[in-house]
Image (cartoon, rainbow, N blue to C red; front, side):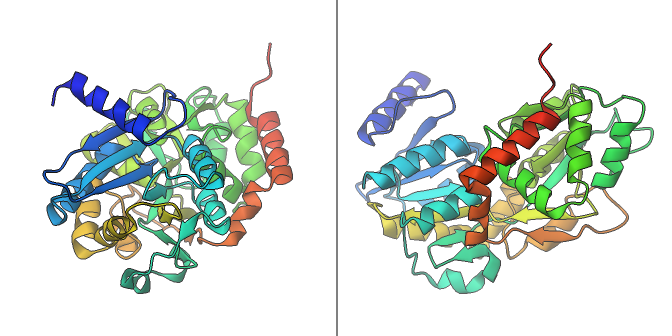
Length: 359
């Protein structure tokens, strides 16, 4: 298929699925299959490159099933999925996102159906909710750093180290990158969890403000900035993307903070209006099968809940103290972060501390 025909095919799929108006972040990719074995539509925030090996494996197991992959940012995906649920309209057969608070809200609002699969029995209790939302990966929030820039004294290994480094000579001024927590559902979740977990939270964001932190929508943008030296440190980056990039780019190092490391399970659910729930269930079962775990850990470095702790030990550059892993459970407790009043207060605090004043 030529590039033009691929673009036209993606556009026709978007129209057929009745997607909302196009925006810069959304991409729709079609994986055709021979024959007429039906279609599976997946809506996700996960970069397509990470999903290609799983999609290929799925189509080997189901050679007649075509697959459409809708990729979007977390907040945009949440908006279009929520709208489809409210309207009782089909959007996708499977929704996968690392913004798990938004996922829990959607499931809690009746937007999902029971997965009804034996695979649920293989998951830890924190990585599933009501048999409708299940964790697919085991992913830490890490710090990435530019090895050359921090070669002399090494990277910070904890938030206490990072705070001390921000208070020193000014080397980190304009050289720290993190999520734009107003644009990124995942970034907001990590920041909100930090505010609950860390005694260092106030000093941390004060240091971000003093050092004119740069904020971005996505892990890949943060990592790009660290790789080329525009930033020396990226904070709270999703570990799967960091590990994958560090494996092929020796400019980048990865640290799991030793004071604590937040860990989430990228989660998936089958929407209530799914047209091919059986294929969606089969895809989830593939991801959590031995073959799927081997693909994730070997090819894409997205870590499953079952093999995650061992794989995390291979991720960090730290040779000393092991991090205290703190999984974020899939539970209604996550809804606290989405309460409108709490969110407004939290973002106000963030802006006052982090956003530089307008000249």
